[in-house]
Length: 311
Image (cartoon, rainbow, N blue to C red; front, side):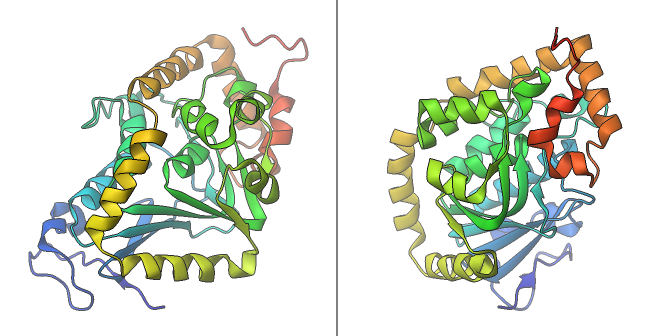
């Protein structure tokens, strides 16, 4: 299927090709995205592709762009489904990168919900009146896992998906509150296994646990997700939004469940032991396309001091 990119022209006239609502052509579309691209295969469907080499880490820039994107999704009366995919088949969204300055994301401030920027955009994505679909190929750990958990539907490459929350292994609390979402999806025991053992979960195990909706053969993943998105894009926006809102009422975590973890993450990450641990991980290849990143669940323990003291 061909896709028409959003116009980067600052004119208020809609570009040629698929119709674009005038309500979604603010200044945001007059500049290129840095960590993602957006296309519109049809008026009712957006496709967002993460493209932040070398491994699609999430930084303050990514958070700001995603927050802006969610705002556009909330205001577009035509869009019904948004598919998130990656330009890198080995990394969907690797994890959060503090860029040696944890204050950069904190400096983004609170979002419209009153929560800090990262949990704010995750909450707003979950509540948006559209269907968000993660087409997962490659690795999505830490904040990457938190992002896919915030999507409504998750479909994973059976042969090439790795999910996980490795934060406890480096002595911090996952900041995007996967505790609240995982527990609802997979149950208490499996949520604790994923969070506390902090090892990788492959596609088949993710499907077995309920971490994803389905694991699909890698060579069929794109076609199946595209067919589903095409189908949803033909349905009535209001029927989708209202039906989803009722499911949200009984399944989404309350705001109070999302506020604490990010504060805990910042507090624990600021301890000298965790700063030293992060430095050891960087020396081993963190944030680069390395064996450490490709096998992070197994290798994260390589950076733990031999006396196992994390404080």
